[in-house]
Image (cartoon, rainbow, N blue to C red):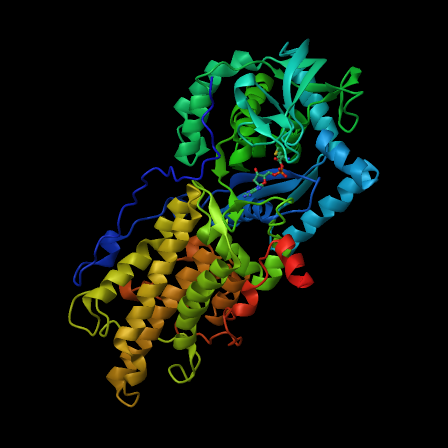
Length: 595
Ligand code: ME8
């Protein structure tokens, strides 16, 4: 039996075609083409949403991949808040297990003190990067122990856990049991032959132990039914297919405890202090703990969505749903899976010295800069390569030149001496032909009008990079619109020219307002700066308030005549070559120093 590997860098993106914005010719009424977004229809009653990241191991400091998962979840959380949802967002640290026990021993520290130290580093990174989690869970907390003990007892009472004998392969690095078909041969750095996990490449050891087993085998057909009946349960589609393929094979029962003599750092099995609960069962229950399990979890548990890396898909899409089915609880609504970041083409690893430090990068490129880059370049379906050079290029092109340039042009005192949101003139830009607008301008209006629905669709399917691509395309269109009509050449003494100038700025501001609103989940600080400069108040920044260019449709525009915000500073500062020298592997840096 061979499992399909997730660790091949290739794109398996399903062809995901969006409805193209229809060309809006002069003369066609924009309102006829309006699409009412799903969100605005649903906005009246309060809806709940619950999003989680994996909880991260505290055996090492956070790296870029951890921040990536957190930024994705943060983006979905902020997006749901903008849509009027009551959203809960949990992240945290996974602190039990052999790996942590060994890391604390190696550091010569008490395990809890060791965990607290590293957990604080994750917390600090997240607060520095505007991760707006509403709960931060540590598996060493008493509320979590209670939840795990209860969960275990439910499975036990249902006869789904039995005492057995486990003999097989175990990877401490992955904290994972493996079947013989998941294991292969390799040679370690000293030339010794070893066995490794085919999926992660980590070393495995043979283990034989008395412990508790979970009747995983009993859930195979239920899991298949769930996945077949919910084709969007695991997204993107390629990962859904991986799980279905895994389930074509036998599903052996799963060992869910370790002997206490080998693993002390964990939650003891209720009623059997000689055994410690398997760290993955312990860790997965964190999602329930945050929801209020066992007493009051329903509100959140019915709307839970997980963001995970592809390395832990099996745990989330097979073990976790099986545990939940066993405990009689609803299954997650969506498991969003993302691929991995490599650094300069190589897997990030301590031994190669090429682990990208996310905190340092957020300081170098700003919080918004690193968030934008990760979400703009991160493709969930395939691995992505990180280089500082790419960050500089992307941010300078899209945030400095394109978006920043557009704002700069339209707020420049030369064009806008009164520093207001100017009026729209329907005669200059009529719904019917005959004004000063040209075909491309109508096209742009149609694209920006459609943009919120396009972005919504991409956010929902975790293709955030496509949402950002769509926004960047519209920003370029708006820049071309300004360029095409060169408002700086108009004669301000001529009333018609002045009205047309105001209209150009008004339309550009309306575009910028839409971009700023849609970008809030990605770059909260930059969006705030942009919207504040346009005079858009905090209460006017929700999805429901988008309402692009009402004046064009003969409706009142609340922004017309309003004073611009006072902060006329640059939207995003240009990054220079000093920002690209950081990314050298430690070894290379040391060698360079010696010279
Ligand atoms: O697996 N690129 O924790 P962990 C992108 N504690 N994302 C990456 C990445 C990379 N190179 N490396 C890691 C665990 N990640 C368990 C989880 S959940 C109940 C328990 C991200 O510290 C990605 O989300 O090894 C991956 O799944 C996670 O960090 C693994 O973090």
